[in-house]
Image 1 (spheres, rainbow, N blue to C red):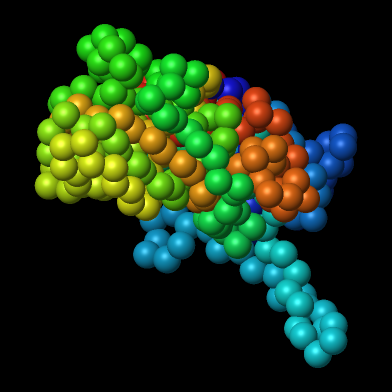
Image 2 (cartoon, rainbow, N blue to C red):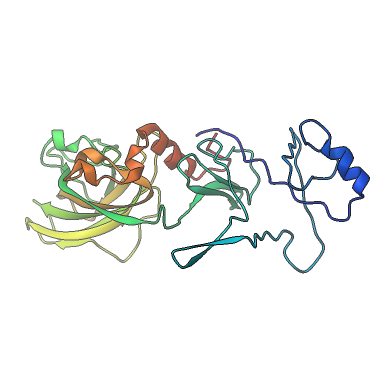
Length: 307
């Protein structure tokens, strides 16, 4: 869905180069090695539009970085960095080969994974963007008893809902949570069923995943009002519906869902629904478009989808 450009690969020091060759390369303005010339230690080496490749037939690592310089502060020994990634845009380019690594402008580390015939942009979770549970002021997501409270159902029709709005036998509805969370991983909520036509059960699961067999979030009897807490993963539909759950009913019943918390990693909860706006995470400073782009980047497709 987005764009941007791949980090230039870092150069490496060429060993065993004749001194006259290094000097010749060093005087190239400004301290650059021409394509095909050695990379110069201690200088800025611009590869231009070419790629610097390092290969090895040894049994050890192809590249090993170390910085032995340290300093001491408050009794702690602090190491100097051996590698620095420079942020360059929001997302790695869709042409990036599998195994590519980069950092976005929010300091999230990204990698390009290749599997199943496609390429997928993944985020590396660190202590800076590890999953966390974000409690929210309890919010009603849907209540099929009211037409206004059915607005977040993406596939409303006479096939999925009966004339009173109840979820029909053997049907699945898809509920959009994008006004609550961007790029969420999961949600915690409360499910209530009422006015069921017969005994049955309800399942809640991430959108765009097969409906699991042999499980239920709640079981109910005819005309019984019953509630139960649940946790479910969140799926992706498109840029406008970035966070979607699916709900299946074995027998026709009204569905009420309240959300109480979200699990987020590189995503963020909409600060407007938090009990205190100041409690929003630092990622709340990102725009909705940025978070949608990140969510879109993870959309599974046969071809890269993060252009």
